[in-house]
Amino acid sequence: MTQPDRTALGGSYNDALFERGLATRREVLGREYVDASLAKAAGDPLRMELQQLVTQHCWGDVWNRPGLDRRTRSFLNLAMITALNRPHELRLHVRGAINNGLTKEEINEVFLQAAIYCGVPAALDSQRVMLEVFAEMGI
Image 1: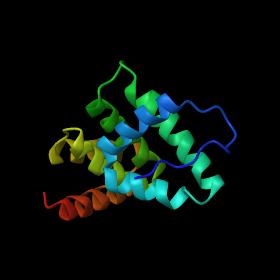
Image 2 (image 1 turned 90 degrees about the vertical axis):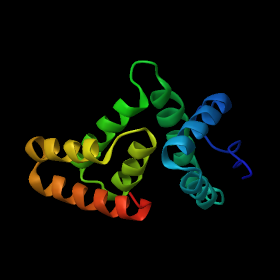
Image 3 (image 1 turned 180 degrees about the horizontal axis):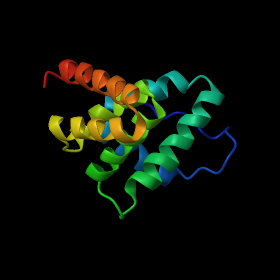
Image 4 (image 1 turned 135 degrees about the vertical axis):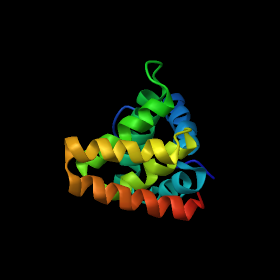
């Protein structure tokens, strides 16, 4: 994929951190999803600015910090996204959790724990999304 033009955007951008984040983002969420997100944003400076921010700071910086491994970060993301009740993002991060080595049972445990601390409706929605993703992935 051709890299998006980020030169006209505001903000502080670091190409090395963006590239590092892009690699991590593709490894966790899948190349197809990430490249489609960037392609969709390529013609829109407002969308591209958010893609730049997320790729550079979230994926390039935070996801690559040495303090936690990717499995642990996936556990945390599943719980936090459940608490925020963001099913679209949860769908991506269930796939990412599988890519990071979590088992189906471990992912389900996150949602059982979240039921107690975040509420049953949030956990039920998360489990529904999880089962849909498992079916899509054939696992």
